[in-house]
Length: 256
Image (cartoon, rainbow, N blue to C red; front, side, top):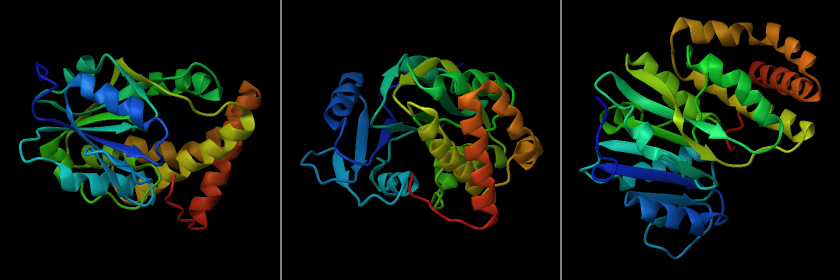
């Protein structure tokens, strides 16, 4: 049985590079009647917004943990540039067996629309990557993951480390966030480079199930097949290939 209430005992940590979308996110969370802190890369005069120079989302989350109230039972990680839909469905996925839930990302345009049609069916069976735009995790588990290491894919690190510790995760398709990503193949190649490199960084800092490690070991070999899907597929291949090279040469960028 899932957790029944998503108000009491729930604490949101929201990462924001700038003040853009900040006002809308504050209104959204206030309507949801949840406790929250927003870690912002710009100084803003609001009781629920704290300043930290932008060093990456991993750093924002680590800083945000210092504000978690003692009564918090569930931690929710969210991005400022998202709109949350059907949150209770995600919350209800938490149970005695499920300790972490990550939610679907819905986009209206761009190459990522097609990419998620490939990724989500895979993630229903194998947790090969998380979506950090909206993640829900039991605080007792979250505390065991801290501090989050310097990593561009802090969401996948959280997922991988949770699985490594023997807890179970779930992809919730009913709850989702709407947001914007890349708009063309050129932007997509850069984005795919960052996200893939971040996942390899996450793997360096965790030990998830063998099937996940094998998937990324084999990724450079089957990534070229994505080129058959046109310009977007070629962008994915280009980004993945560059990420593998960056990882092998120990490129350590951690600011997403």
